[in-house]
Length: 174
Image 1: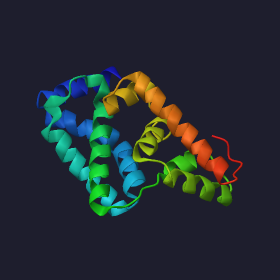
Image 2 (image 1 turned 180 degrees about the horizontal axis):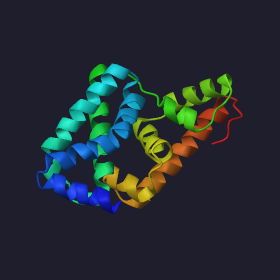
Image 3 (image 1 turned 90 degrees about the horizontal axis):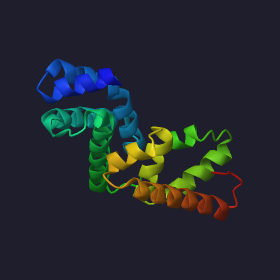
């Protein structure tokens, strides 16, 4: 992690090579996040390009080098949410479905239906926690809110997901 922080510090000071190394390091995370929100490969690739540009343009605004990844993910999430608002589409994070290990197709459909019924913040917090495996502290930094708030939101999102699953007569436990 110390190497990443050194690269971030160099990038903030204007070292283009260091910035490109960081993007190379995190491009898969950016792509997966974009794909999970936008559900279209072409749009996800375009999102990575746009977010890379925005991050490059605003790299001097990074306050804490150790949170560079969460800073990038926050830019991606904001970009994707803006795109979805423009398209007025409902999103579903299929990666959470896979990550949860829903092996049977009826279970996947049940979880997919339940996830579609959640609000954007709940899907967002579940994505960051379980898909990106971020810690509460990292999620708080990404969402720019207190850790206690993240814990509350995560708890509510999981309860809402459980309720949806139980309401569907499902036997999947979250």
